[in-house]
Length: 314
Image: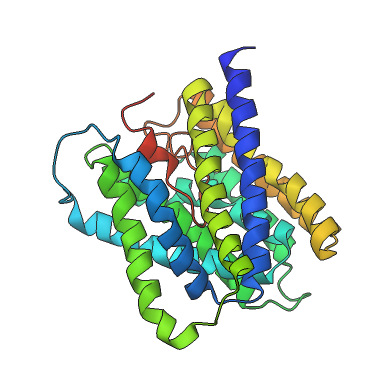
């Protein structure tokens, strides 16, 4: 089995686990606010994060070299996590994934001002096609749009922005800084909100939140293994397999039916995303390769950032 095949297999396993992770977010989110869920999943993530941090051999202090960028990234991750939890708790899984699939398109757009990236006519056209696909999915004007749709779009924007920030300053910052500060920001801000939103939890609810943290941790390391084995252009498209799991789990667990508009819109978004990956990885038209080098799921409540665990690697 070639390294690229191994990378693809690891990636498929990682995104399959992420799908179960998101199912748990959907189930637990039906009973608790995103603020309470985020507090406890971040709290339960600290022991897992400690395992990673004690192995950090890079030299330096905990003081960020780019404090304003690190602060912005942490703030964005707080907002994106809230929106992501809310979207998964209120929308059909397939719709959420279809909207989040536009993260590579947004990364490409944001890389223009933040990374100095030049986007030519081909990738600009791909972005327009992808955005058209999102419009087909949400169907503004013909379906009632709610806060869940807005939350999913904001989560996509947040995931893209923090990914681009990671590309901008990640080579200068220690992995411990890039991982710990966002988690602390979530923990502190969500802890402050508990006085207003806390609901008593049964043992099964605590187990569900622990499951979210553990599944996010395991899935992240599957993606780390995938990125270490396979080329980014092979690993990155595997994220689109989540639409399959969304269809299966949505139908079996939540009685959700995937509509033609969701499938058609997803096809447009996926096609445009694949084209951008191909342009960056094969044609060599991108100096920074913001999408293929992001090395992240984009948005994953309760998970770590893949890019920080791969610092210094190809």
